[in-house]
Length: 166
Image (cartoon, rainbow, N blue to C red; front, top):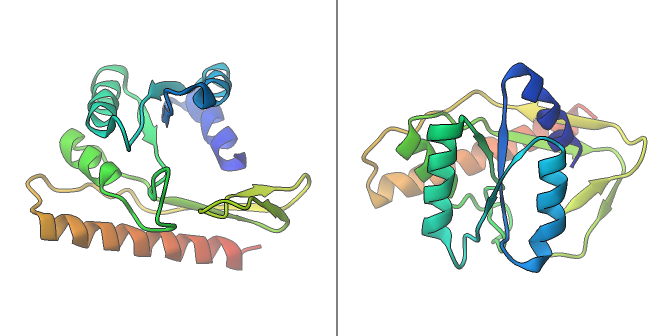
């Protein structure tokens, strides 16, 4: 959450983050928080309405100059496995992906499938940001899998870099 707050503050510099948030009742609170912080909310689910969510993200990027913020392992994992959504969005829009990872000194780890962590108050947090990567158009299935592995490895390297800087 800490890196997201910092990135949302970057809206003064022209960055407008867009978040895919569940259309269910569970998504109401996160959607309200994102809107109040100045982010763009796209209601959808990669499980139930994935194609629609990708279309809505595409329109938000093309028409509203939104920069999509995605968790690459999706809402249900497997943990730290890069799903194709962000790659397809980069390919469709011609816009780059900017991989980011963070680490925190003291965290509370949620007992969830992704072992989500929440930095504790006053904890040191390091955000590692990689180089922008633009996906070429016309990827076949094998190339898409190669890109997924490439991005997974990049995120892992950034995470290790952030941990080492703590």
